[in-house]
Length: 96
Picture 1 (cartoon, rainbow, N blue to C red):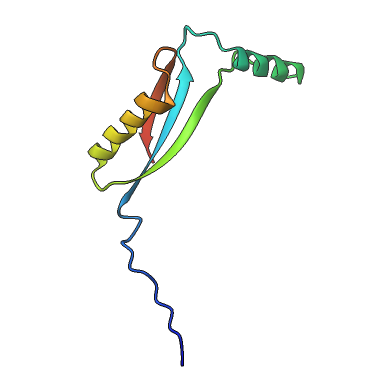
Picture 2: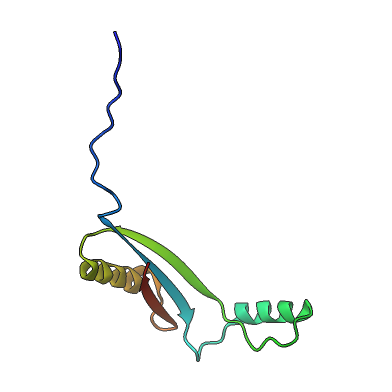
């Protein structure tokens, strides 16, 4: 008796997925101690013409959604509810 392995039926996953990037940065008026430490370290490494470094967060989010507008709304919701502290951080969403 010969066993035949069947692959489960799948939708074309490329068609149903949209990919976004979210970049979160501290607002300009918020002090950035981590960025300052990195800046000082880079200067100590011998790079003297460095003006400034600010740290941030970067997320790549893939979402199962056909409608780009709906997907963007869901990403906005994720940002506002979880990823971003709106008091001290700004964010930017880009479709990849």
